[in-house]
Image (cartoon, rainbow, N blue to C red; front, top):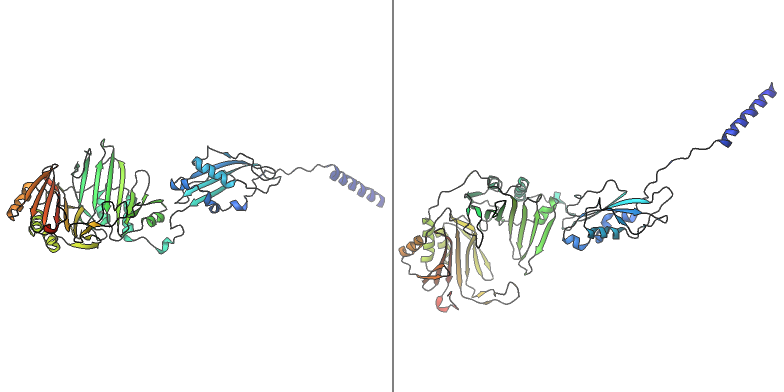
Length: 485
C-alpha cells in the first residue's frame, strides 16, 4: 500500500513538471505611449522671448500644431512638420514654435511611441482665449500680458461708480439708444430729426442726428461734451460718437485689463500726450479711447459703427429757443469795449466759468449750460503775456515769440434750436450804438469795432442762421504789434 502511494506521488510530480516545462506564457500586450515632456518645456512662460516682437506689435496670436518624429536617441527628426489643418496661427508664429522646441531631447524606452504631436498656443491679453488642441500629446501655452496689470490685485481696486456706468453702456452695446445713455450717465439731450450737419465741410453731405446736452452730471465737464450720429452716403452703416471730458481721468488700461480685453497705447511724437484705446465686443461693438494730455487732464470717446439704424429716443425736440437772450448777451459783452471782463461775460451769458492759467494766458471753462450753445467748441481765453507759441512749436523746440495782447470768445450755436439771423445781430449793435465797419472776405462777414481795443466779430451762416460766432480782440491797439488785416 505504501509503495502504491509513492508511485502515485511520483506520477503527479512528473505530470506537473511537464506542464511547467512545455506550457507557453501569453505575451502582455502594451500600447506605446508618448514619452514624458522634458521639464524645460513644462512651463511655457519661460519661453516668452520666443514670442516674435512683430507679432506682439500686430497683436498676432493663435495655435500651432506640430507633428514630431522622435529618434531612438530621443531627438526630433528634421524637418519638423506643421499640421496646417489644425494650425490657425501666422507663419511667423509657426516658425517661432519650431524654434522653441529645437534641440529638445526626450528620455525614451521601448514602450514609447516615436510619432507625437505638440500644440503651442501664442496669445496676448486676455490669456485663455485661444483654444488648445485637445487631441495632441503635448500642450504648451505662451501668454504675454503686455499691460502693467499682469499681476494686479483687482480686488483691492474695485471699479469706480463712473467706470460702472461706462461698463453698463458697453454691455448694452448700443450707442444709438439715447434714452439709455441719458438714464445711465445722468445726461439730458436735445435731439433733432436726421438733418444736414451745420458743422460738416467739403463733400460731406450725409445726414446727422444732432444731440445737444441740456443737463450734464457732475462726473463730466460741460465743455467738450458732444454726441454725433452720422449715416454713410449709402445709408448702409451708421456711426455713433459720444465725446466727453471726465472730471477725474480714469485709467483706461486698467479698465481693459479688468475685463481681460487687450488695449493699445500710442504716444504723440510731439510730446503733447498719449492715447489708450480698446475694443469692446465684436466688430460692431463699442470702442473706448482716451487721450491723456501731458499738462494734465484727458478726453474720452465712445464710438460705434454698426448696420444703419436710427437713434432710439423717446423724445425729439423741435421747439426753437428764443434767440433774444443770447443776442443781448453777445451785445452786452461787446459793448463794454473789452471782452476780458469775465464777470460781465458770466452775467451776459448766464453761466459761470472756471479759469486755468497757462504759459500764454488764462482760459475759461464753462460751468453751466448756455441754452442754444453747443459746448463742444466753446472757447474763451485771454492772453496778456505779450508772448505766444512759435508756429513751429508743435514740431520743434523753439522759444515763444512776441505777440499782441489778445482775447478770444467763440460760440458754436445749435442752429436747429436757436436761429439768430445776421440782421438780428446788427440790430443789437445799433441798439447799443456800437460803431462798426463791415469787411467781406472769402465769403465771410467780419465786423470791426475800434476803440482803445479792437474787437472783431466774425459770423458764419447755415441756412440763414448764424452757426458760429468768433469774437476776437487786440488789446491796446495803439501798441499792437500787428492787426488782423
